[in-house]
Length: 533
Image 1: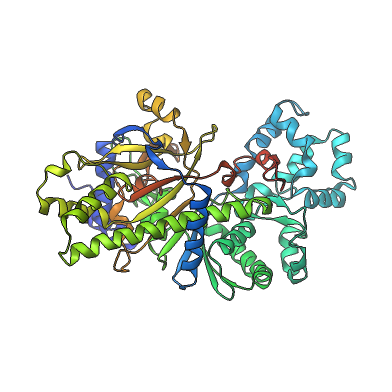
Image 2: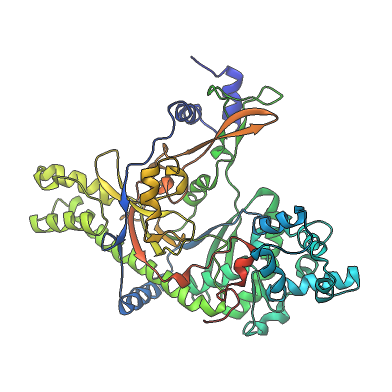
């Protein structure tokens, strides 16, 4: 049955969609999302590689040498969240029937309030508004008033602030104070004094420069943002990047793309028919961070580093985190070189038998793409198979030891073509399967989103990344829109289903390279307090 009218087809086209892509989404709604054929989690010596300090140093040095070639490199940082997500526990406190802190979270927050980077700005506001500083308000038991001033329009309104612009760190060493004279006054009207504080935007720019910057060069950084945040972030970056550029002797080229509207997914009724708005138009919605694959695909770069905006290292850890990012880049380059050598031999039809066996061992044991009975194939079948597996996007992913943090897990998965390979599996893909959840929860490592990707093939030609996603690994869930039950779909996650058919190398990196901020109290960890404990 054709569920689309001619008007529907024109409307779909006007939004940048193809009819085929929308019909494919409807098919997924009807058939359901298959559970990945998850075999086991990856561990050290079974999918996760570990390197000595000397090897890490050597790979980092090779990355530094690569920088001198002037190849296009970019840093891709999803940054579309609201700072409000850091404050869920404080919102609960604001709505609680009690007025003084009761939970451990609440007690820790108020006890250590002076340790937060936003303390000075908040204290200044309270002095101007209440004629009392924060310490006096705390003594008076005005806890909820303080929270109101933090979260709502009554005060600093952090709930509406982009998380990328929320103050994360205090630079207690004042090593960066020499650039303060370059800070434009315009910034103050948005965010108060920046004499000794850093936002995720600032930290990301500095770290990116440490990883891919050269004196007199340009560092390319792409923050994906919400449409409603773009202007304020754009103003902030435009004003603030100059002092960093001046200090480091380089320049930044910063782009702030939003999710592309043609990645929005169709909303359906419980019967899997298109859901329509009050005007009779088919309704679409944003499709989660998997939609960012299109933004990543558009980057004019040979190599791209990917990280999350909430994983920011203060100065005390920047040397370590940037060193390991460089090492991951060096590992990527080394494997690119090996892959290129094999594929060029195939192109020239000059692959001797010993090199063919070497290529098989490399695909099986370094790229970890395993196929039963590969040695029983004919020579031509082996060549065709190896060419198809080698000539794919390549990524190197840092993996940290699992210390009960939430995140995707490194896993062995059986693919539709019968091969077994490494993938990142997220909780939502298997949460309703107890057997797989037991495997998932036993993982020794997890994905901190510390990824470096090759964006070009062995001939230097841009790869179409969309051809290597598992479109079936979407997420479908129920929702209520305007009082009506509907089903919605998010595209496969960027680094799990979105990169399911990539060549993947997992490398253990130190836990200190992972410094996530999921709640405001995470900023009280000694890592974020700029100490080296």
